[in-house]
Length: 187
Image (cartoon, rainbow, N blue to C red; front, side):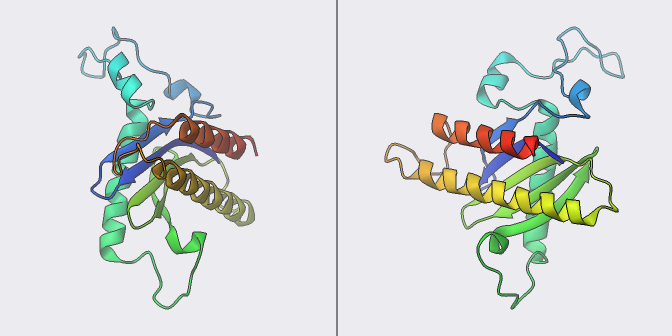
């Protein structure tokens, strides 16, 4: 299991932060950006991202699409109310953990929700389904990672010059997320 992409979504569904982590083991060849002269299946000329788009969100279009789909699925899960067991008494990280949202092209999307933000982690799943112990362990690591990103986001909001619900542009936040992702992907 390795983190492929991560998003922080505002309460109104606006993206606050999107980033991919191109050190994936299995899908490296698929995450490379297409050159501007390549053609799709129908012979149309395509370009994955422009320089302006890449500067705005350092996340490939493929991952942006997957994160958007996972965000839609999270909205469905939250609307249905099926992500919490009433009276379960969960607290801490578990109180915000939505869990597995959906599977997309060999990736699993996991969700974490707070009162004002939603966190979506897109994880490359290379663990055999029979290995439940390792799967559970990595899921707990992912919960911790997202809880730590939530802490970083909360710290960034304490800056008096940051507008709530605006794009996260803090270098400290970005460095923290990169460090957490490197640690998660390395273990």
